[in-house]
Length: 588
Image 1: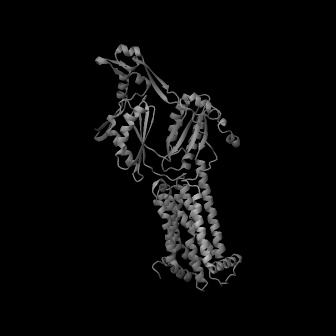
Image 2: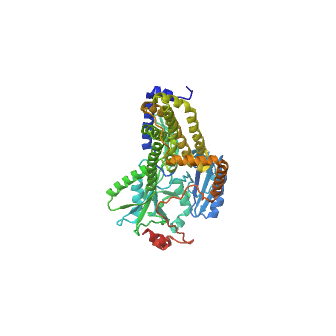
Image 3: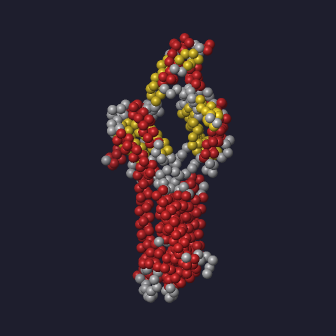
């Protein structure tokens, strides 16, 4: 017996192999139900954004006073690949791109430290810099419009912020809720110039004192009851009345209330965007984003259930789901699973047509579920998801998984035709081709596994593809060496062999094969010519990273001339059929 013949052990001791695959299939089935369903694989691109707001500052001022200093501070960080700044009125946004091998959390901390070192060099009138990671794949999974004829736009905005957001953000898997349209709350302090002049204080002095006093700060740590506790100093006003009662220090040490210098009112800032649904106003929309690693389908189901509860509790408010990417993602998953079943069925049919033995076909077909189901367990352990790439790998590998089993079972049947019993034929046949079967599987692994180690963003996308194929093939090898010979030894039945006559397809194939051997040089030239023609034709194929999907929807984007206001935008978008009459007519 060869040292590679682990099949002999499985045939003599079938119980360990049976128990092993029962456990693997159980774990795989549990993992299949636990795997998140997403559109694309989760990728980690280290992008850090630094946003600095300075009200009223022109882009030229922001470039020299903020953007240039931020760029110089982050450029020296180890691993930085590119720094890009974008300037608009009152806001500077700098995106720091790191090399892919840099850990995103470490990059975020490095940028925070770099900005902290230059904080005193930035203008005093800026808001605190916002430093956050950018997730290029974090797209909303659903968008919902909220409308109510009995509520104003302000009331509808507060309802979404105070009620809808709080209810949805408490659900597992939801990353954040983003509101579109509506208005933002603004506490407006209107100072009286006459009062300021009479008291000898300027608006800038009031602004600086409010910024300095109306803030919550860390206060270090202290021993309380024998335990160390964090201490915070809370000075932020909790209401308009508290803010109006804030003490403003005048020259000479005197103090006055903020309300003595003007009026403090709870209003909303000037709208910069709006939402319209079927011409209805007021309307506010919100988008649901999943957290990293969560399932699109499960998060959408939880969000819809919670929205149904809000709809029942607020019958006067209409919730309308106007867009989602979940249906497309779920459809991809369903289609992939259907194709997997169809491919498995066709594979079994083809195997039966060639083996012409029902028992041998069943033994070969067992390799499919015993290879695919445990693969889901390893995917779960590696943090993979059921996405476009991993499902493509599962579908692609379907036909490969039975190869080893077919080679094993065909050789066993050949030995049985020599008059051997199924038990003896399984022992000798498995030992005879053990090395060949291992070589076949490892060759396939050697082809697909390196795909997982590609560089760049494409490498992160196809990491799951290569590993899923390799894992499934290794499980198929395990099945071929442990399960297939064992099943053949106990379930195949010896029978009198009658060599079947060659069918029509076999006779045609043998005639064609005979011709290619007779004219071997012509056959070789034809093969080289076809190969060269194929290489030449590749240049005419369209190229791209990911095919553009057909989601059965379209988006109309309009860009108005510079200087247009919100009313101009509202008027221009009132009738979108003017911008795409042919598509709108086709949709109707």
